[in-house]
Image 1 (cartoon, rainbow, N blue to C red):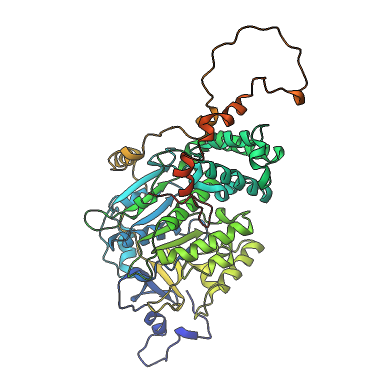
Image 2 (cartoon, rainbow, N blue to C red; image 1 turned 60 degrees about the vertical axis):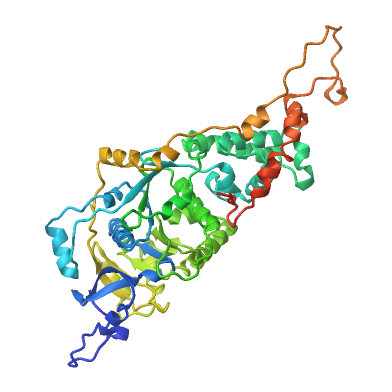
Length: 527
């Protein structure tokens, strides 16, 4: 691990007794509470006398954990999550590959762990941390996390349905109509029922004054919903809806609870879970009050496979992500995006990420070489030849810069990271299932509820009237000459019924006024 010949901020006077990396080490000597990440690497040697740390109070300034596959990103998340929990800070982790559940169990002692601990000056103790396990909609292990279609909102739903800008605007119009009429969109069949109604002969006039909904666009939306359901995604939407405030809990011993969202069962639907993670974050943003600068975050949220969120995203969507990330800091939530290279994250979002942990990058192709150069340029001026260092890092090593207690970037430091104290492997299926069923949240969220909502209301019809006396059959007439005496269609009966006419007055008064939409179009609900 070589430093650049030009020296820079890490150079020190030879023969003065001051090590050449003294300036770098001094940049990580914080007075307040801090997390220990590892020890400084300099000229190929690890220096446990130069610990690399991150101030606890700066972890709501967001961060990035990046690096090629197999370089140790997941273990870095585990290391940071453990120390946050020990400091009383709740953590949210998305477990895409199914190997983070071990954070709930003490680690396995062994030669490699002891060797790493000795190299970085760590007093290693096998420790498990209080954990809750969740699953999207009950698919796979975990307490089910569900959202209603209403609260998920048109912007995020358009992203996951892969709609274009015109179709997204039409979906927003559909949500506006449902909100204003008090039609609750709990699951996807509710949304499908409202779309079908609004392109029916009876429903078309409902949107005529605000642009209308074309049959072609409605068809695309309905087909997208159907394809989405066929992928098994329908179970993610429904009730009981998950209250994201559950992520803010601490254990009886004062440690923060680590919430692990188990995603292996849906890892073939990457766009879905990345969008769902954004809903969780947007929901937290909606509900949490302003907190200002705290001595520790209320929650640190790790957003894994972050590049999937931004892939193919519209300008408006990216602006919403940027605004949410920028503003949620003042509500006491820190967000770490986890991906392969910084270029996976838009520049406006990257600019909000003050804490950086960059694992090794590989330069096997011209594209890899380009990504390497781009990554090196995103760091502050360094005493290292970063392109050389980034390709030479081993597993469990990273280049780090964080925000100091004064909010200024620390010197760039090549670092050998500490070993996690919890199990660096998944717990077995039986232990995971037992932990899920023992959770106090299991009884609250385990069973799905299908109550009356938009689908049922649009399917209702008045009770049939007594059969009239038989009369002579009439000759059929063209549709446009339909008389008032003819039996109205089912949709007409619904719209003209007292049930439907009173929706805006009764339910609309109660529900419609409570719904306003946040930056992301997610519904603001009264808890």
